[in-house]
Image 1 (cartoon, rainbow, N blue to C red):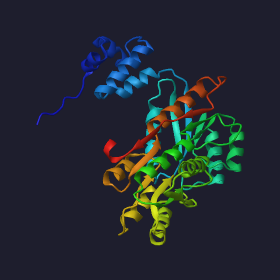
Image 2 (cartoon, rainbow, N blue to C red):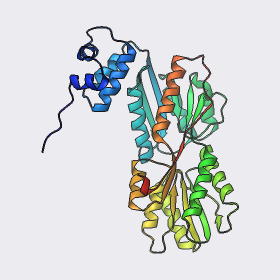
Image 3 (cartoon, rainbow, N blue to C red):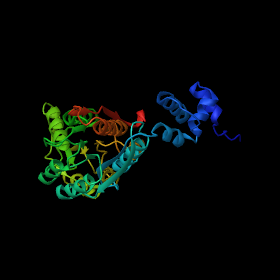
Image 4 (cartoon, rainbow, N blue to C red):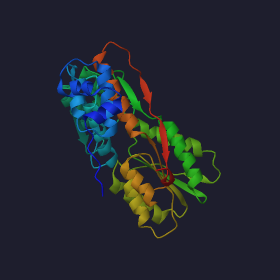
Length: 340
C-alpha cells in the first residue's frame, strides 16, 4: 500500500500559486509579506493539510491585538455542547484579526445564580463574552455590571445591556417541528413536547411555534409540555411513562436536551414505533439518525453559530464604538438519515 506523501513547502506554493521563496519568507520570517498574501497561503496550506499551518497562522497574527474571549455553555456531558466548545476553540485559535486566548465554562444545569457567578468571574479577565443562559434576574444584573460586550448565544436574553443575540428563530424552529410531526406521525393521536427548560426564551418559542402549526391539524393534538431540565435521565423517565400511559401517543418532539434519553426509552418499548424529532444537531445526533432511533433533527448550524459569534466578538473588541447587529439569525437545517 502506497503511503500518501506529507505536503512540503513546494506543494503549498503550487496550491497557492505563489513562488517557493514567498512561502519560505512566510514560514521563516525572512522578509515582509502582505497580510493578504499570508492569508491566501494559509488557506492553501489548510486545504492540502500542510503541517506548518500553525506557523503561517502565527505570522498572520504577528503584532495583532491580544484579546481573551469567554464562553458559558451547558454541561460538557451533552454532546452538542462538547462539540460546540471544540468548534469555538478552533475558531478562536484560527482568528486572523486578533491573537485570542479563550476560557470556556460548562455549567452542569441551567441555573440563574451559577450563570451570574460564572459571568462575573469571566468579566475580570475577558474582553468579550458569549453565554447560553436562562433569562433570570441574577444573570441580567451580572450582564449590566460586566462593562464589556456580552452576547446571548442560542437563546435570547431580555436585557438592555446585551450586545446581541446569535441563534435561530425559535418560532420557525417550532413550526418546522410541527410540520415534521405531520409528515411522520402514522396515526391520529397526541404529540408530546419535551422542553429542555421553560426558563429558556428559545424553548418557549419552540413550544409556541409547534402548537401554532398543529392548531389546525384534524388528526393531532398537543399535550402540555414536560421539562427535561436538559437531562437524558429525566427525558427517559418521561417518555417511559408516556409509552405506558398514553395509548394514543403519535409523536415525540424533544425541544432542547434529552434526545438520547428519549431514544433510549423508545428502544426499550415493545409496541409500535413512535416518531421522534429533536432540535440539536451534532455528530452524536447524526449517529442517532443513522441508527433509526431518531427520525429527524431540525437545528441551527453548529458551525455557523461558532463562526458568527466569534466574528461578532472580534468586531466588538476591534471597533468598540461601532453599532453591532442586535440579532444574527442562524439558518435552520433539517436532517434525516438519508441526507447525512
